[in-house]
Image 1 (tube, one colour):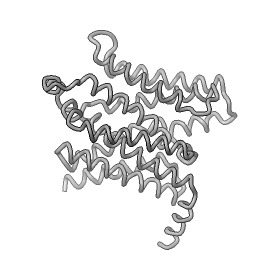
Image 2: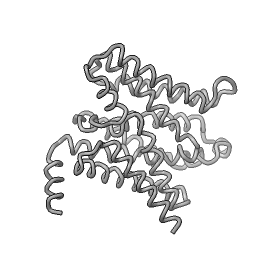
Image 3: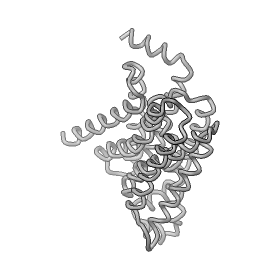
Image 4: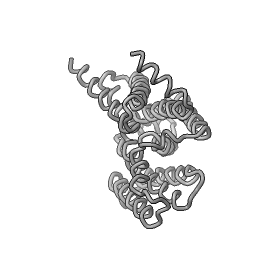
Length: 279
């Protein structure tokens, strides 16, 4: 036990490990809050689609050798989230899951194709693997990256705190929300933008292919234990934070990929919640 404590103390003495831990906690917290809404509205697959869009934008940013990829990735992902929302509300044309599937697969294919044609690195497979699974990117965060993560997380949390009643109404019954004088379209637009922001932040932790796990697992785990919306939100946040902390710690101790470890811990917690409900 003392060896484990000493090992963790040694690792956490490095700034990049502390940065990774802080980022993981904040990203997991924001993802869990958003996840409850997306799962209840049956929009959970949007996280997977937008993460593929972000992958394509990252590929373009890498080709252009941008110093800060966020300057391109964030606006592109937010724009695609808005377009998907507008398309799902349209009376004609490609609707809902079909539009999401087209955008998801297309962006992933374009991103990988561009990385191969305009390769800026000899290790294309390694770069793609890191982007898709977040194997090393979480350990290369700078102080500026953490500051951006903290600011974005505060905005997301404050949005949920001050707009809780409106978000609650829109999540369960948009018709009732409109009848109550709530601008449901504006709330949906806000949710879409927040989703895009969290997806981009989460890619630094678990990569493009695993971001939807951070959104779905904590929400589903909380729903196994509680029924009230407020209780589910709180339980989802606690579950996500604990899972992220355990995942980062396990990754440090056993030298496993950070993103995959965090997702596996989330899956294990979900299974435990299911067993607890049955018992």
